[in-house]
Length: 451
Ligand code: GLU
Image 1 (cartoon, rainbow, N blue to C red):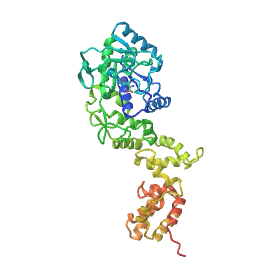
Image 2: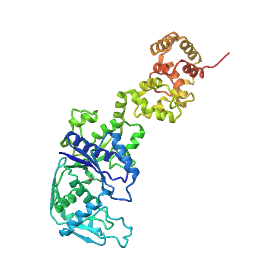
Image 3: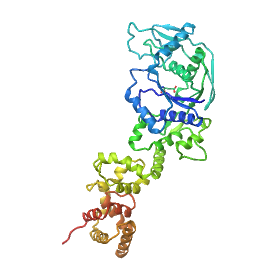
Image 4: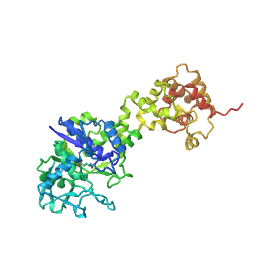
């Protein structure tokens, strides 16, 4: 049975790259009827933080990437020790007092960190020159020359295992069949294969996912898209558009399809069809996808998602608001939102009498005196018995015909008077949602009283 894992270190939040690795492992497991295992690589007790762990678990769940089993490496130090001692007793590893630069291991104690007396000795694997070959499921055959690989620290002098050693012991003990991870780990793979060989363990299959590059070029960085999944959530991106976005980072379902949900992806997923070339992180694409999903989302769900923030802003009362009214606003605006949080900016005038007004819009559309036109429109709206979109539109059309002016000469000024903005939903729809009383009140502000 296929068993794959995602192995995050809780030394930071879950970012795009990690989430993509998790998703591809999950997709592979589901598409093969296998198991998806989560392994928390928390061997670095100083840098591992509970809040990062919680954020990672929360984000995975939010994305819908549920796991079948979970393990914590910090609970398994004895096991690593045991395996290292086995290698010692077989003469494949040796002990050393001090970690030297020659060991070439990234995760040795940081320079400057004292090496307290009484600490144990490090256990180090002897690396023999030779060749290592793998048949990567994505990249094809890769050959490594081990003469460039230095002796490998297995257990550091503080008793903690190195990443490569704990990873191999666990990948083997957890019966993982396929190791799917980012291309940035490719240089670890030959080191790990040497460890499998030394321990006499079966070697799993490897698949290295293409790098994700920033659109501006270069690796992702804090400035260039390396944003935590939870931040995307806070910005208003939907889990399903992020999942859709992530799956397109290196994979394509074919037939130029771009929009597909996670269940369809399970059916179509083929690890051999993952690209070898780097994927480009295109935020415009995420925004486009999110808009597509928002457009088609059940408006009731969007109402639920908006209520807490609306209440926090005091735009509605938490336990006493007009749900149907919110629903009509969501229906009016959902097709225009990039992220859900755009709603607050687009819809402020529905909640606030003292809404923000764009001064440029006023200058452009309301500097001319429109008292007469506004007054006539206001009076005719007042008379409407049925305050619905067709009636409002009809009233407006008749008025501009009578006044012999172009519709747009009045549409833009009215919109600015009612919303403070130059863009927004259709004018008649928005007047209908705003209601007769508020519409009249806002128009009145721009009607000069001559008498
Ligand atoms: N903890 C490692 C990381 O977060 C896991 C690498 C691997 O998948 O082997 O990069």
